[in-house]
Length: 265
Image (cartoon, rainbow, N blue to C red; front, side, top):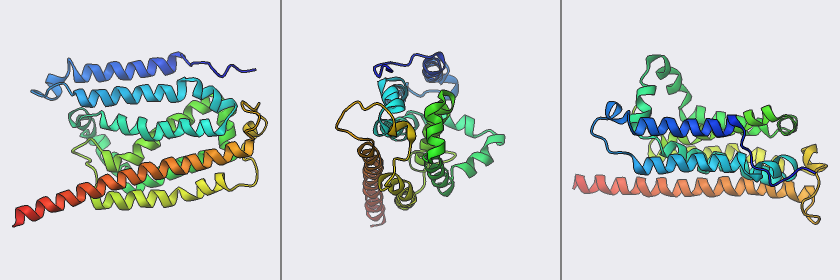
């Protein structure tokens, strides 16, 4: 029996997160006078960035990983939601513009990144990554192969960064889109993600053999119920976050219009 209480402390996971934390500390500390002279230490940004690293570790390093990998599809889905939503959002919000723009200003990166961060491309890549990884062959492959599972999680986090970039870009070189365009973008991605949600939620079959034959942590919680909960959780989380973001965009758009009207009069 696999110990579902296991915490992952592998060097590539812990070392990677520690390296990112150290790099951020160096850029925000000793190197800040060179990158952004006169700028104070970005406390708010730093808190969000390190919170993103903690959430990332909890998603893939805590017992959630063992439970999601070997027992419950719904818990595995929760892992993915943590990577796509709070981890990716806080990661982007934790990066001040002066830390991002010197990288984006490089001529060799400017054109491909400008193309990659267009809303249509971001939404399309996000939808494709999430949808293709939920194909039974790909999903079960990741569950059976640790390396592929790591790749899957990194792609989920990366696609989450792309999804949120048009809304939360920290860059002045590649700024967020307008408030109205953000609302259209959010609605479009919600619609595009509906097929994969419906595929998981309304399937008459158990889609992933790993969960169909997994030991039951709860005797009364069947594989079919687990799959239903995973699909509903996926949709509710995506819908809730998108509606919250939609509301923020609408509020800011309305506030900006009132300011313009006041200036005009």
